[in-house]
Image (cartoon, rainbow over all chains, first blue to last red; front, side, top):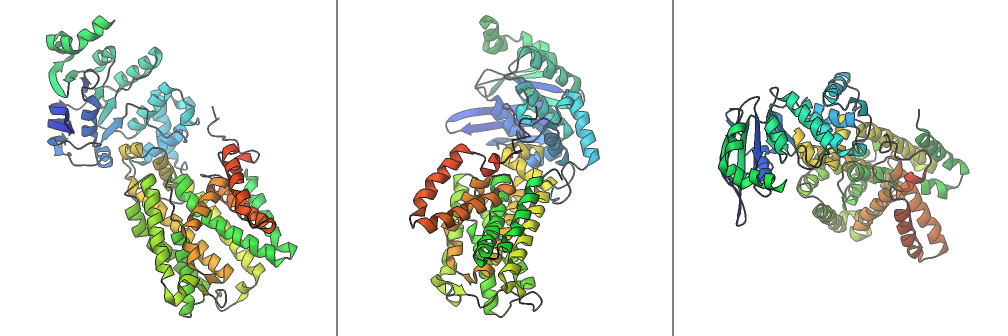
Amino acid sequence: MLLEARGLVKHFGAMTATSSVSLAVKSGEVHAVIGPNGAGKTTLLAQLSGELTPDEGAVFFEGRAITSLSVPRRAALGIGRVYQLTSIFPDYTVIENMLLAHYSTSGHSFRFLRGFGADAGARTHSLEVLDQVGLVERASVAARALSHGEQRQLELAMMLALRPKLLLLDEPTAGMGIEETERVVGLLSRLKGEVAMLLVEHDMDAVFELADRVTVLVYGRVIAEGGVDAIRRDPDVRRAYLGDEESGE
Amino acid sequence: MKRPLPILLFGLLLLVPLCGEVFYTRLFSRIMIHAIFAISLDLMLGYGGMVSFGHAAFFGAGAYTVGILSLHGVSSALIVWPAAVGVAALLALPIGALSLRTSGAYFIMITLAFAQIVYYFAFGLESCGGSDGMRLATRNTVGGWAGLAGHTVYYHVVWGCLLAVFLGCRRLVGSRFGFVIGGIRQNEARMGSLGYAPFGYKLTCFVIAASIAGLAGALIANEALYVSPSFLHWTQSGHVLVMVILGGMGTLLGPILGAMALLLTEEVLSSFTEHWMIVLGPSLIVVVLYARRGLISLLPGRREARADAS
């Protein structure tokens, strides 16, 4: 197992946001977490990335307990995090954003004299990754000037520059138009197999296109877990979640 | 070079002593010293996003190092000035390590609190004259040479220090470290998820800024030939904060312009009326309202090239 969570519990005051949740992600697998609003998906993701510490339970990465490790430490082990709200460096250009990601994997940054963009190898690698996500032409544009979809692409590119083993994706297509959604889903499906993903997503078409396995979360509790087809047929899931979608159409 | 503004500014500053009036030479020495102080604050404020209201602590620590060493007969600038930088850095290490555990308004308050502690410490320092401060007999010497006593010579030394600080900081903010600091300012959570541990970088930035403020303190003590607790007072921290915001945060030229504008305006206004603050306050508000990015945004060729690149 690449990532394994066992019996995670998280309370916020009287509310239980996560109620003994266990899940496992294999290497190269895409595992989706779905559930209605307020099901505790983002809270769960935050416990896996290290932003929140669970009250009970443990998280393992490649067999090693990481429950008490900080976000930077987990990132260094190979866990990349893509936030629900776009999280980039707006004042920097696209290539500068990429270089910051790139340098985080190559030693410390207490380097005070040499110019930031002077490393040709880092530049080349960054441009390659930008090419992969289709942003290479925008390399010298300030990140704040990108469209919302492009900013999400940049964020993904930054995560890929880290060469992570696992990507934690919190609604990567949130707030995107149809065309942008297709581009991001296409990009993620090309990455499938290279990097494992834990995907929190509202767009059911995207989930069923990308995921190998699905965990369904309702009120912080796992109500179903299994392959895509099994989840699609599961009567509890249909009632709790998918049914709403269909009747709402 | 594609940057004519710094060259023009430093060139013009070289002309000041040629007017032959000691008053102006000394005034502009003070302005340049405050410019060094303001640049050091801007490293934290504009580049690192750390709003410190206690930067005077390090300025004063530099000045008091000059005073205390002179009591012990140490007068060589080659020893005293590095010592002032070192004392400021050593003081900044624990203050920064504790303050940086907080952020936002708490950071402002805790840096202010630490600066007040240092202020009252100096206040009670009887060997340095307590609340009155102390006079210095002479300026520091260089290898036995007392030439710094001449105001024109001293002016050029200060000019050289400002140039060195300006070029050094330009190098620093363009380095990998500089970009990491800027990244932390813009999005600390993202830096964490990239694998950077922000604390060490912020603390290093804090200590570098404090060291440069310590140099400015050593220079002001030599300029004024006295040290007093007023160098450490919280109004001093506010004063330099105004210089940075007035001139333009997140630039290196901005703090120089801010120091120049504020000190010159104070000088001119106070020659007309003793109630000069009544005029200065509203005019600062006008500048902040109409030039949000500071005076530097009013200069030609400085239109946010980056944001408009698309």
